[in-house]
Amino acid sequence: MSIWDGFENVEVSKSGNYITPGRYRLHVDQVVQFASKKDGTPFFCVEATVLHTTSADYREGDSVSWLQSCSKPGWRENIKNFCMALNPGCNAKDITREVVESLVGGDNPAQGLTVDVDAKKTPTKSINPSTGKPNMYTRLWWTPSDKDWTHAPVAVSEAEDDEKIPF
Image 1 (cartoon, rainbow, N blue to C red):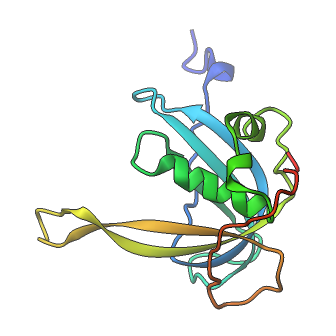
Image 2: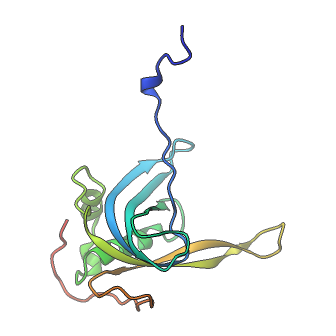
Image 3: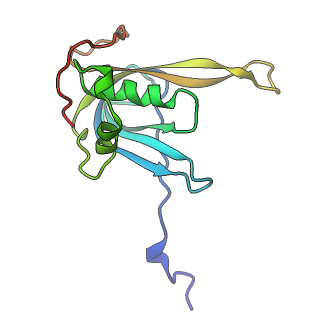
């Protein structure tokens, strides 16, 4: 018996390069849904390639990930904002269950689309007992990348048109 028996069945753990503060233009590589092996918590995941960024942590061509736990407050709004950024001009009510299920489905319809995101460290309501200061998380603001790349953040506004969703 070898220590390598069954090696072909070992699952590789994916670890992402998570989006850090800065402004990004991203090329979407894939959007998936999966459950945590630890406790079954569902996650929405965007894997993307950096086209442009102001972040010192990444360069053009680097891979980044956005993981959204579907058990945290605001998860639906965060995912809807991402979907709205992929679909400039669509109405928020057009982003339905069926649209999101299609987005994370096997055809991967968002693959190849571009999107912009502003990321900023934001304090939570909870206090870190060792520092006495609020815990921090990286808040993301997704916007369409239909304009020329700029380092300045863009204002987020809700679209009012009823254009069809491309996925």
